[in-house]
Image 1: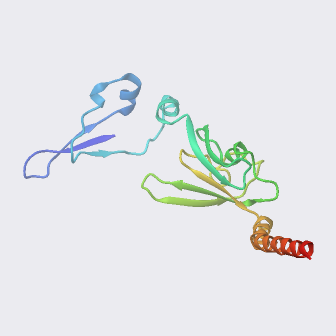
Image 2 (image 1 turned 90 degrees about the vertical axis):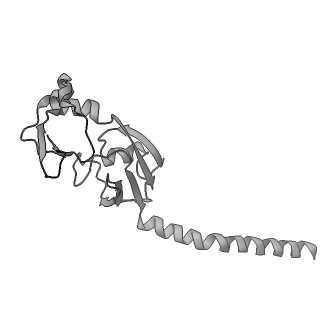
Image 3 (image 1 turned 30 degrees about the horizontal axis):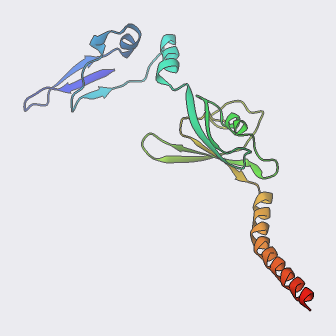
Length: 186
């Protein structure tokens, strides 16, 4: 990493210092931990080779061990779940009790992710219990993700029929009650 700092004065002159963050984290070399000032620029270059210690250290110290994921929709026990970091999508659905038998659309699962810049992304996936973790078919989840298992066509049809029939059945019950009262009073 390179720290670039503008020097005082009218001319645009800069001082640069190379920093070794791995030396700071692994060995505690405080000279690699300078104070940053307004206007400083940090320039990060892609790593050519990632040291084994860096990967191990990042997984232990810099990443959460437990994440919170909201699983909603057609699962047995929807709600907020605490899962191990990098839990795949399918495993989170199973942790929420699994998809409801005939109500869940196994071909229509949504993953809503809030990005660091505040934007949101929505991706659709198909549930395949035999699928290993992969970004394309069974992505690892991040803290704050929401997984929505959508309704099947049969569940949508059933819900629509219930929405129409419930008020009508209430009217039929009231009508039957009036008939019973009229029959009894005569």
